[in-house]
Image 1 (cartoon, chains in turn green, brown, orange, purple):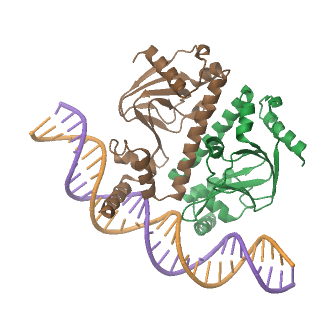
Image 2: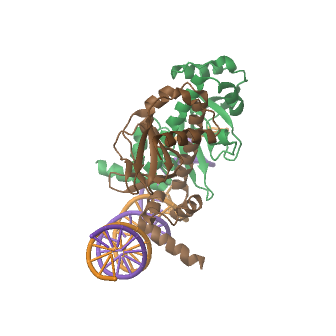
Length: 197
Length: 197
DNA sequence: GAAAAGAATTAACCGAGGTTTAGAAAACGT
DNA sequence: ACGTTTTCTAAACCTCGGTTAATTCTTTTC
């Protein structure tokens, strides 16, 4: 996938969302990245104030707490926007890393420059607002799941939400997504297996 | 506070945020609500697809799980926008109630009509996107707190984040905000008291 | 100010999930 | 196919927070 193909893929993606965005304003050069399975697009603590677009592949957002525990915030499959909203918007260091779970093709723009060029386009602003609405609603559901549901329930919800990931990614990633240790997840799966028979 | 004062207070709020919004587009009538301490602006399960503006007062967003446990998602103090982004955007039933912790003055617009009239104003769209960014970043921090931090740490964070609420609202509300029972919070406070001396 | 209702504390008990360690099973590189 | 490394499972033990219930402390309310 060369630079021009990536640019087209990026723009086509927004069109398929139903927004008629005027790309003539955008004169920025797009940067291209090829990320190998297991490698990182950026790491916790970096300044990742870029807008990344994942063309193909699968990534996870993972952060490590002070005590050294991994927490997988999200999985994301291309094509879609990825990156740290907080770092883009506040120019702060990112609080998580993005790790490729499959080989990925990614391109990026500087968010500040991109936004400066696109903020005059109403269709873009609407699209951006819609994107924010979506990720907010998703986060809200996830927040309440941690408080309201047991780990077992969160595991079952994960299986329903990401049926294709259940068998393709290591269980420790699943465990860290639902906020428990791999040992605890193994126990839960054992319990489920028994009660199903 | 009469209708005209409320309208002015609403518009002034956006100006102080630094957005030069063209209110001439907005011809909708604003509805006014006076909510007494303890009462609800709307309840879980309602269709609350309105944009609410809390002029003065304090509210909490609270949801009750299937098993009957209360969870306080947020506290919000006027002046600011309140309501359910999800319900506004997806026309779904709200998943939480908004309860007044003090007497409140609130006004509201139908979100669909409001958005239809304002979506042509770039300043408004930027302001809306900025609002979404803010609440998203806040949710993201809260999500990771539930996974990474102990209940004790979450309590201390609450005290730092809402110093003025710590002594003015019932402890059970604090407990339900940090995702534990009132009994557990009492134990934690006891432990802190001892270790501080 | 007394009675009633609500909120906070304390104690005893329980269970889900964390921790550590050891061993089995899969995945991987050469 | 082989050994190496990573991942998963299993068991023993521990801790934090949930549950229940009794008791005290605060607010309301009349």
